[in-house]
Length: 493
Image (cartoon, rainbow, N blue to C red):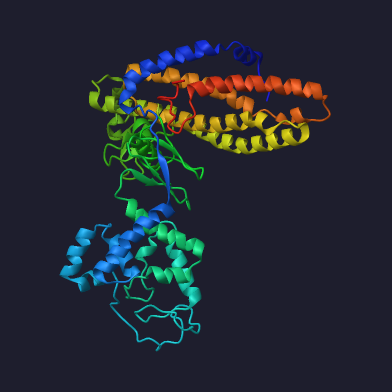
């Protein structure tokens, strides 16, 4: 990608000391206005699922000994009672049969074992032992398919019941272990472990599929988490990282962009209601004679009066040119709708632009990795001297994501003075991000083109590296790459 002379002059004229000094002053002023949601540098730690397993097993052993029951029943009882042993103990000793029936731990209908020789689903011949204590039998293949279906996203496999019509018997853990592959069984166990930690507000499981890590944040301060599996998410809500927008802002934004709320705003701003049935009508022709397609009422688009009194023979049509005091409330309501629609469109377009740029940056990161390999193999550049490319590529993804959510934050920000300073910092980051992104999108094949003299190749590459590193350094100072980085506190160098 070619760059203008202005871009190059701008890069050459950057004074890093002045940049950083100015950013420090801006940060101090900004944190004074936004300190209530400043996130600081809170640390967190990772806990693997295996570390939780030991604590869970201790609880299960305690329940087994207390009630003289097996492991399957102990797991279901504790999960069903949210690991509240006191409550479970009280109700279990009052009426254990009632508790077991309610939870499906004893069959409500049974079939005598050995009386059925075919699978109730596929009608194939049964092998020995393909049944639960209720006696309803199914073949190994059908059991496997049924249990695996219970492990699909959105299902709770621990709530799985016998597939026989009317049978409420819970499928025990030991039966799952027998029916499904070992890799899938870890998903089943994770459901129990997650229920064990759900009541602890300092813990949150990584929402990425098949990730076995959870994060501990004892401070409960909202933070961005970069999990060991590579996934990034917000500790408070579990959604993808969204700073500087708060969790509530993002939730409202998601609802706003995923429902027809803005369509209704557009209708209010660009249509008028039929005076008879109130159906919204958009004028699509030049004539002011409107006929409602719902109720058939005919009226004037200008004054909304019945068209019957607009008959030109009676002179009614020309009454529209006489000024009548407007309904102030209705006028204000319509103007407010237009303003709200314009505001939403402005912020959504910029949000959408950065979201698309973020997706392209993710693809670009893969290309950058390929460039690094080719530069290393063809030109013998050490990998350590090429890591700046990948660092810059990774940073632009984070910057685009933050800029994307900065428009969510700006949409809901009402404080005028705070908004002016915020938009100034936002603009500074966008300027640096745009040029950095341009540099990263450059075709680097010229630097390992063996048809070009080696000296020339190296000179051009070092010049490119210097320019990229300058912009990367400045941009990084505006957006410090830390797990809790955000536009709010990122300018602190």
